[in-house]
Length: 257
Figure 1 (spheres, helix red, strand yellow):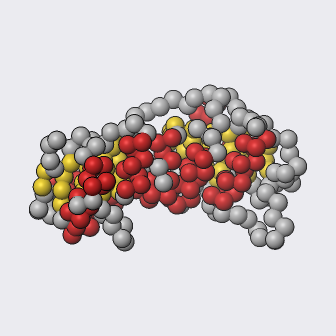
Figure 2 (spheres, one colour):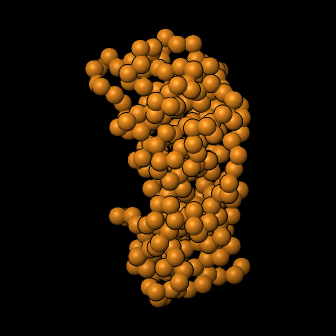
């Protein structure tokens, strides 16, 4: 088995490229490459049958047989000191291994699939958490309208914990693009009269989740078959959008069997 390429210079072109990918949320759109940092994400890539184009592994990780074998799963592997790996990482506590995978190409909306629509959801942690809930609850397609956080950014990837590789993800959409979906749109809103537990819920469906401060746009709300409120007997004004998403997705999944 071919060993790794050893890199010792901070100014190595590969390391310079990876630093940029790790710090630029939408950089994958220009480069066609996605940086994944950490054993869990790298292992998920492997388990999903994807092969990384490049692995970067620290010297300490290379001494771990499991991480060494994982690194060699990539088409190319580079070995660096722990300090050089930390110089690439954008994390407060750098991981010890990272992969580069090809960014997904353009896709068409698949009609009829249980889906999630993100309307300008801007916090990367919220977006990643929603993707994770969608994957866990069997919603196989996530559609992001313009203004939503970049789905393949490093922060969204970390929050998604590998969910990206179980979902069809399409971003940069406009409201008219949703005509292709062909399932009822359901809106979650703290201002709705009807409540989630009182409604007859369709499934499959597409849940629409809106901007953290502004909610769902008026134009998109008019397209929704139902606008529903989550009962909050504790008296809070609203829920975090990622928490609301998990509740809504579970409710319709349960209703649909």
